[in-house]
Length: 258
Image 1 (tube, rainbow, N blue to C red):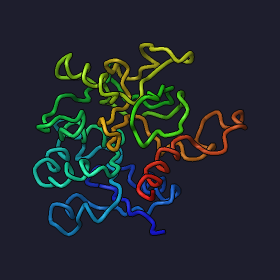
Image 2: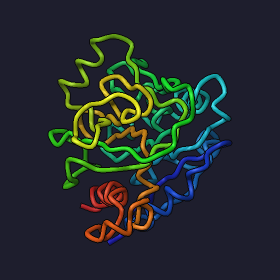
Image 3: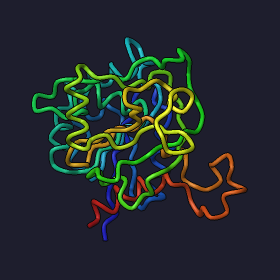
């Protein structure tokens, strides 16, 4: 069976591209690092790839706001990205990539592509870097979380991770379409404020998807939990053979292979 090609989008300031490529390689994909200018210039075509990943980092130094410049480039010059999402192929944006998907108007999904949400400065007004607990919405259609447990842990590392919406109607639509994929919770699996919610996100939102489940925006970093040794408490988690983050990438590769 042909190994699925995965486009890892990068630009100035991207710094999690190699880790994301490693994740897809371990998951059975064939990752290729592609600069956004190669897409804009037509040197690379999106539909030559089975999966697209927009990794974390600080694209263009987060000038104006996190992810805004790259989002504008994609919105204005890489219009095939919206068609790629509509085709049903997997797209994942991690941390800065989540910010890009939201500010490009791809998430939350709307018929017009209007931006209806944003990711803004953490309530703590500082960079948050630590492990968090997450609850997965098992009723979601997301292909990325198939067969994952309801409760997982992943690391976060961001300064602008607070998810906000344009109006209450946007949040209600996210709820109705089961597009809220992950939420920050405490040790008991319940909603809680800081530090369990590291940024003050509305409704404790950590990840959202489109209703079809093939486009994921996630603030925590699954590519930083690929082996059991990545977890700070790995010596006591003898039941854990590999990092739960790897399964998210593996699900994407399995989907395009099926």
